[in-house]
Length: 220
Length: 317
Image (cartoon, rainbow over all chains, first blue to last red; front, side, top):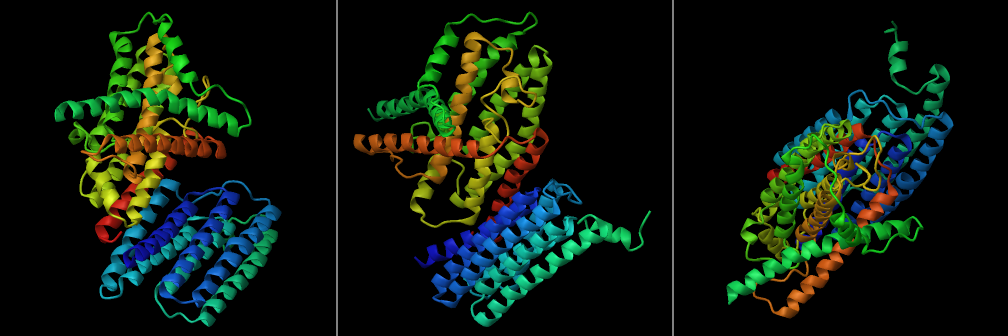
């Protein structure tokens, strides 16, 4: 039974990595936001499962926060932002989808090798979950690097934060206060970024972050 | 006596895939029509279509070579052998030592090679486009299939389908790498059978068609044989997924007649479920642009690679 519990935890964490790849693959705004909501749903399922097998009821609160804030509130708000900015067209990625995917594979391989080497003596439940969590974080980071559209950079940031939560629940003993404050600081960050998006748009008539670089003096 | 029984069961399996393939096609068409709120033809319509085509006269292009006439039978033979090797209702059949995932991939590859040749034989531009696209997809779908094979083989310790099914029945643990392999196999199956996100099986004469473009010059019994081969290929992929990932209900060698009957009924159930899910996918998404397909298939390749990688890094995936 114990063995199966672990397997299901691994399945859910692996599902989160898979959804991160779906985020990388998705190149339409609304599709991206839907996949992001799915990402949060998988995260909350994973956290709830951890709560069940660790017997830690406070993790259920974390799962509920993830479900309500990240799977419902933030995607809906981003939907409205995208609609108001009028940018439901395709995202221009800096490199194509194929190379991005390959780089993502490399990142997953890297995080597996690093984590499994570094935590050779840790308990197996935490160990492999940490490896998955690190790859989710790295994939989110890569999404922020490869996308030029500010909204999809925000999505990359949020998915990175999901990876952090996965890591925190895998390693037992994260206090609930920290959990809640992280969740709310992400929400605050989201509000700030939302305001910022409209400011960028007002100033440059676009949310393409390339224009920021151009403005800094690399104008041709 | 044992030998006769074993051969009889093997023969039953060969006849079964042949008998069920058009029915599966008819079932998916019927369900699709119902989901689109149309009535749709009877689920036995593909049999009637095939019979009608067999009776019709063959119209050959003037510059058609011998390949054009013999190719359809080659394709049909390769696909039939591949479909009959997959354990459908029982494992450990008489020829199950040949039922190897790599061999099945190779048989499908052979059929595809001939199909591409036939598309180009008469020299029409549509056939050429179809053949070149089919090969473009194949360059990604085949390595993906091989990676899936490796992942499954690393977990189960064999590439032989009967052994894999046996392993899956006895081990109760869920594995991440197998989940990735399943997702990849579904993508490959959609692409190989020219189903909707990649190609539309229901239309002719679209500039984006792939599979139909290669068959455009065919008529009469040649067309019947090629359509039958396509139906067999769909059945092959659904039974492959069923055999590897849902091996419940498969009869073991030495079981009584009752267990074989149970195996048969569950197999038909699996086919119906697979057909239904396929139609559900098809009706809920739109066909993608041809130049987007390599990205889509690249995902299958990547998932297969990821599965193998996870398996290599840690035993417990």
